Image (tube, rainbow, N blue to C red; front, side, top):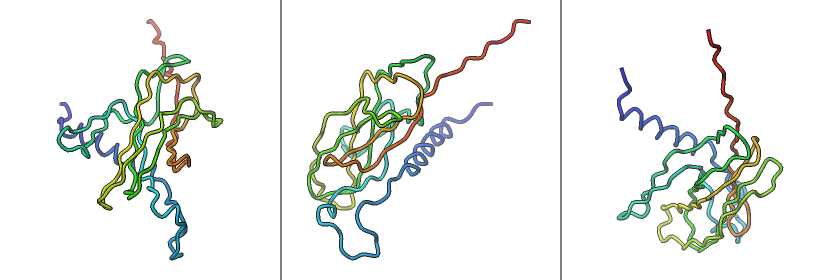
Length: 178
């Protein structure tokens, strides 16, 4: 007996939601007990979540409708260094009524930058209930060794959050001939 197709898709949908919520970043600015906020931060977008995936699909008619395909919790390889042909970093941010610039970076366990996306500019949102969806593609990404890595998101040259992930070596077990 096989699993119905809709359960297969629901499994990945819920895995993506759980992964998305798991990496929710803390709010930036003063604590809620204070009625005043730093002026420069009051309109800064807040990070809602970061994901890594193999493909991003955007609806032609509804530009805000985005599908993420093959969301990654980590990366596996048979040998190192390993080449990942294409990897997307995607983040969702709270609405901002001012334009801002963002950049994704991939860092190794020591904090060294492996690669960085080009700096991109985002236009303000008129609807405060909407969210900004920002993404960058990394092509030809090389991981020199297995270990801990993280993808960070900077807004206006300030890191607002990150997503840690592991790059591991696949261990192949040999079967004994009987």
